[in-house]
Structures are given as C-alpha cells and as structure tokens.
Image 1 (cartoon, helix red, strand yellow):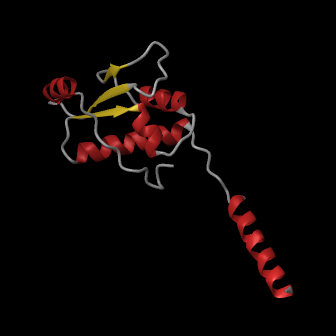
Image 2 (spheres, helix red, strand yellow):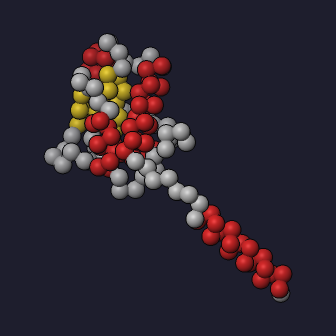
Image 3 (cartoon, rainbow, N blue to C red):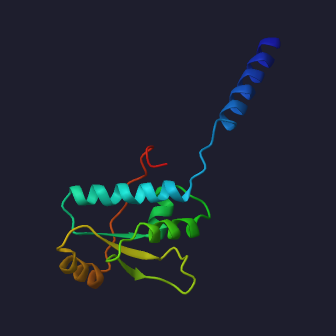
Length: 130
C-alpha cells in the first residue's frame, strides 16, 4: 500500500513538472519570422507568389485568439508591391489574404491565383519558427 502511494505521488509530481515546463509565448516577431520562412521556402522552390491566409497561419502555429497579432505580422511582412487580396472592415479577420511577391513574374501567377482563389496549405510551424 505504501509503495502504491509513493508511486502515485511520483506520478503527480511528474505531471506537475510537465505543466510548469517553460512555455514560450508567441510574439508578433515569431509570427513574422514564420512568414519570412514560408516566403523564403517558396522562393527557393521557384514560386512567383505566396498567398497566405490569416486563419491558416493561426492554425499552423496552434494559436488561440491571436488573429489580430497574425494579421499585424502579415502586414508587417509586406513589401511595397505585395497585395492584400481579401480584407474585412475590421482588418483583423481570419480571412485576411495577402499575396507576397517572390519574383518578377508574379503578375501572371497572381491572375491565376485570384481567378481560382487558391492558397497554399501550410506545413506545421517548425520549432525554429516559434
């Protein structure tokens, strides 16, 4: 009986330790870094444009109630010739969609993207991104 009690206490202690493990709070800078990694990866694959949606980034980073932060990061990653493809009045919607120019041939690709409404599926965030 005593051994069982000791084992139960050990398990409770391990569970408490796991819960108190350092938690990294995601910042706007982390989200910007993630977006820049996506842009860099797409550029390396020879893509002309990268279209990202706020909700996709929010989900891939496993965030909760951080859409305004995601939308701010998305805008901060824009260059002068990148385009907002969809925006709501609030500006902080899960449907915010931005096309990031990756090459000089992006205008032809953008026309196809706009007509078909495509966005890329995002891979889960790497540990380096967050």
